Length: 226
Image (cartoon, rainbow, N blue to C red; front, top):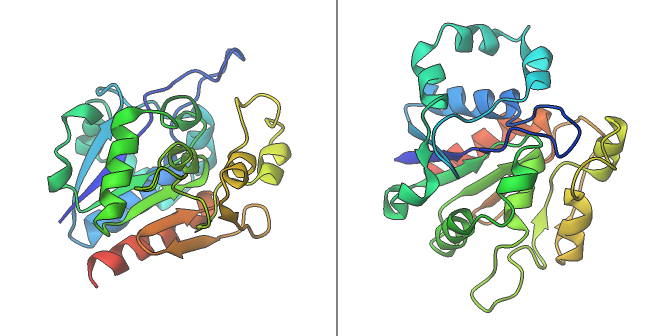
């Protein structure tokens, strides 16, 4: 079985002059969980090539054992520098898709046509789709077969508005994921800021924040082994 990570290609935080990208913990934790469980893993992004990593996420994760493992993992670093272009992915070869967060996805994964088509197709087949933190934005413009928003009436979570405010970026981001999920009719839930919270709604698995990364990975594995 093949698990596809869909990573952001976006490296600039709007007009703030700051760098952004994927949040490293939300990628490394599930990545190594899947690898250690024996799954085949592929990396894709909208543009292909290098997937940018938010520098702040490196600082936040540098003391974790997995960061040391990553530092010694030349193969993974090479793969992050040469992701597959998302349009080249053959959907029939994907068993599950996982979307790590970070602020980068806010700009390039919400309305990315190949990503939307992948999410809609996988879920229609009952294949797991998982989003972590800000990557919940990738669900916003996806649709059900009848044209209604994919998340309408569906229990989900994602990075909360209160967490965005806690890091002082609620006015710098292009939109708030929690707010827009609710506007699409999602049944959004959250726990305390920075605490683990994972929601499983059929084949759709969502995690609130970085602390939820392990739980999301475990839920994906549980579905793939069912």
